Each structure stands twice: as C-alpha cells, then as structure tokens.
Picture: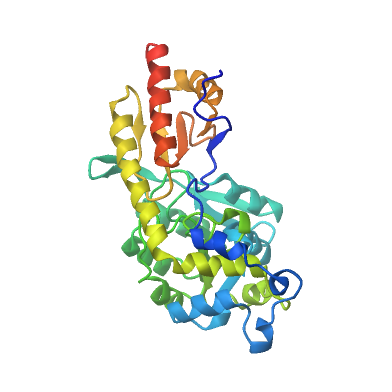
Length: 356
C-alpha cells in the first residue's frame, strides 16, 4: 500500500508512551557531561543511595533506606521473588494479569495460586473488579508466602479501592504483599495511603516505575516503598557505586514537570472516552473501564485474525491476547490523538469490508 498514513509501525501493543517524556528531559540530554558518563555517583559519600531515593523519601516522609531504586518495576518483582520465595512455596496472583508474574515464581521452584476477578460496571462502563471475598478465601486456604496485587492491573485496567486494599492487607499480615503500581498516575494520582499502609504493614512493598506515566521506559528506572520487615531486600538492592546517573537525572526532571504530564494525561482521558463511545457502537465489542494507559476490548472471535492482518497492513499493532483468561480480548495502548482516531477509523473500515 503506497498511500499509508504511517510509513513505520505504530506500536499500540506495548503500553509505551507515544507522547514521550517531558521536553525538559530532551533539553537535559543536550547538557550531559563527563560527570554523568565517566564518573561514579558521589551520593554514597553523603550517606545516601541516590539523589532520586533521597528526594522521594523526603516527599513521602520516609527514611531514605525505605526507598528502593530498581531497573524498572520488573526488576524489583524479580528480586523480591528470588529473595523471599523458597522452593515449593506459593505466590498468590490475579488470574487475569500480566503473564510475567507466573514466570518468575517458576524460576525458583515456586508455585502460583490464582484469585479470579469479577465483572461489573463502573458507571455505565463494563469493568473488571477485584473480588475481595474470594481473595481472602483463597488466601486463607492457600497460605502463600507472597501476594501480588496490580493496581491498575494489566491488561484489565481496573484498580483496587483503598478500602478493600486495607481490609485485605489486614488479613494477610503473615505474607509479603507487593502492590504493583506501574500504571499509577493515569487514573488516580492519590498518594495518601502510601505512608500509612507502609507504616502499618511491615511486609508491604509498593512498586512504581518511570516507564509508563513519566514515559521513560528506555531509561529503566523504578522505585518502591518498602516496609520495615524487608531489610534483606533493601540491603540486596543497594548499590555502593550508585545507579545510572543520566537515568536518575531524567527521572528527577520528569518527576517535577507536573504541568506536562497532567496535560498528556488529560488528552488520554478524553481519548478513552472516545474509545468507550466508539467501541460500544460496534456489534459484539465491549470496552472495559481503564485507569491505565491502555484499554481492554472484547471483540467477536471470528474477526480477530482478519482484523489483525488488516491493521498490520496499515502499520498498526495492537495486542490480540491469547491466554487462558483472555481468548477474545484485545489490549490497545492509548496513542496520540492522531493514532487513536486512525485506529478507530481503520477498525470501522475493516468491519464494513468484512460486512460484520
């Protein structure tokens, strides 16, 4: 096709930001010098791990050693499992979740136990929901060593309420609980629960990343708030010679540019509303409420293969899921407005062509 709108592949299947990070990040990169590239961090001489952990600790009211810096949130997940899960022990994870959770437990001879979500509505939009009663029942029965809750969850896009989270944490004080908040910021910027929950539940770790909301996936920077019982993990993740200085500085610049990210998130929220409206008009399609930078859409099984081919011919990639929990669902990363509208137009064109 010679009249393609996009000459290169548009990756709307990886939950990466299509807007990119703060423009101030690009300005900083023009100034990078010998200190960032040839020298080790000097932060350890001041008695801190890094400028980034020092800043986050100050903003949230923690001791600096309770902030863990990692190679994205994926890194801290792997370190947590490898550090605390013994052969034959269990990890309790959502059934409708990121496939990687399942893989890591197997690496150390552990087992996964799943808790299912339920379906309901938030307003007029279909939604996946955490089922607190089932979570507690399965926890009591299985007695896992580690529990993982993703909020927002990938690929369903739903969050767990602060009230339900508190009730669940109270029940499973005997386990290590990881709250994966990689998609924090898109649906809620609430931080009010972080300090109280970390203080009350010493086996709790809340993980975030600069990859999603801050659009710095390529820099591989993540951070976590760790409870007081996780001393081994804190020590294991501390780096005497510091971290990637360029990535650290980019993270701090992005962290402070509230205006830019609020603007981007506002545009994405408007496009989510557009997606809800347009997909609900399509026969057999069901969009699910999302608090992340993607949307889960159920669609007729019979069109998936043809639609996938049609979109690829137009250099558009979306994630057609094929897992036990998702046989007819597709996860679509929110792109720029231009990408989003072109995607909807392309799907409509295919449905018309296929006489669906």
